[in-house]
Amino acid sequence: MTVVVARPVAQDRALWKQVAFPSEHGGWGLTLEPVLLGLLVAPSWAGAALGVAAFAAFLVRTPLKLAIGDRRRGQWQHRSRLAARIAGGQLLVLAACAAVGVRAAPDLRWVLPVAGAVPFVAVELWFDVRSRGRRLVPELCGAAGIAAVAAAIVLAGGGAGELAVGAWLVLAARSVGAIPFVRVQIRRMRHGVGSRGHSDGAQAVALAIGAVAVVLDRRLAVGAGWLAVLAVVQIVWVRREPTPPKVLGIRQMALGIGLVLATSTGVWML
Image (cartoon, rainbow, N blue to C red; front, side):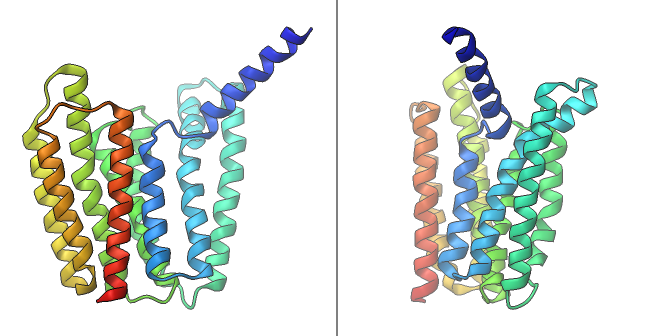
């Protein structure tokens, strides 16, 4: 009797995990970084609500992608219904937090970076529902889209527009450099080959984006300096033996949090 009951419970838990939680571990860090940077630079209750909304938006991608994908393939089943219900609940949380942001923020300027992120998120979702979300373009678009949360939180906290856009660019630059580097390392580990030139070129682009951020607001110079450190580190690491994905992910999260702390410290000091 015990065995018969336990098996469906285990299956249900596995299904919930598959439907409700993203499989890409790096996405948690990419979502945490803009929320943390925005709140450290311009703390506010409105910004905190937008931070929760950002995590809801990150989580809803998985069930929404499954539900839309199953509908497109004409394979509506128990998993599809569960995904639709979970996505509906998460969208309600997102909408409620956005409503708090509208009410608590001094103005609605924070809506502008959210609107600016929509095309990036749309591109990522387009690839996702076609099971092509692991490609470079959707990964970069998704990272650039979620980085806009930093700008929205800064504006919701009463920060200047130049600082908000600059913070967005700093985090986008970090992703532009990190994602190609990680992809090259994983390819080298799995197949023994990978284009170091692609990774090196990405570091150069990241530094250029960081320079634009400093032009917008000189207080972001410390963050741009950390981007330079990341570029050098990744240029060196891509020429060494590749590390396992788990170690690679932990390193990237640590470097990302370091960037957030360096950038926010520079904003308060300069």
